[in-house]
Image (cartoon, rainbow, N blue to C red):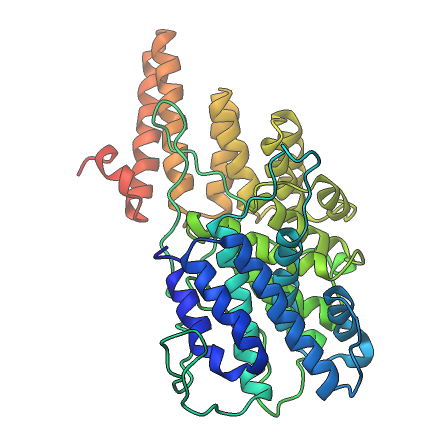
Length: 437
């Protein structure tokens, strides 16, 4: 409940601005505090529908009639109405719509079958998106309310309070396989965390400014690849449409690898909803992001991954495909993807590192050392690579000792200490005890 309370407080602060939607917003907050998460999603969907019907009436001068929520959202996605709702707000509307649809329908068969279950994480995802939508709508379309009680609540309407900006989250600890060895499978290293907590990094032009150009948005998308320490796709496979690029700019921070584990699935699901709301007309680059979001959400989308791989020289897609293969238990296929990724871009250290980790587990220590050395050459500043390389050399030392090759064992131990000491210099905590003063 502690995690949900800041979101509910945020909705409460915004409630007095929203006319006839106030009743549903008060009900939403009450349901959230009573742990009725399915009800939260349903009320959020109703509020979104009211806002869109109001926009249709006031902005487009049209009568909404019996238009469904899906029809209302699609209307504002049409090119003729581009700009009325910013891209990032449309993405959040897609999230509220998706979760609202899930909670509003009975997907079970027999009455004895279990119905739809909605957990805290789904409620938090929907509420976070609703907060962004309400904040935008109030700033763009509404006047300051009078200081009056909110119906059904003890809260008084107060001056607007901006949502708190998220602080950088701590790195997620690496997975430890049996035996205590450190296995940090990587698909991207987020050198800077762009969003955490309630803060939302949003592509939004300054008031009065013109919309960013495709080239400007392209630069922002390329910067996100740099956050993941992976190369962007070749030009022929990139998104060019400004609307699609705007979506990629918005969802990028939700897919960073260092998002705290307890928030990672919710953020990935929100990104996935925004990506799928754009339809099925992505280039391989767009499908790459769909595949990444689905993997982080815990349900890898093999079809999206295959569409990304239609770009045959997309090294980051090959590395991601390896992660999907591992998720499906196909290590041989993962090795093939990683090898192709390493061949496509000699500066891309992640596939080399991942190959080293896989061969360390098999174990095939000669191959592990080979690939980890190549990874260290590509990225000499990454402490994890040197630590893994030290472990691989230590394993080879044991193999040599078992075969009575003492001189070779001493040489491997020397290489292991050198790698561990380099990892220590770079700040790797676990290497401290392995590198004598």
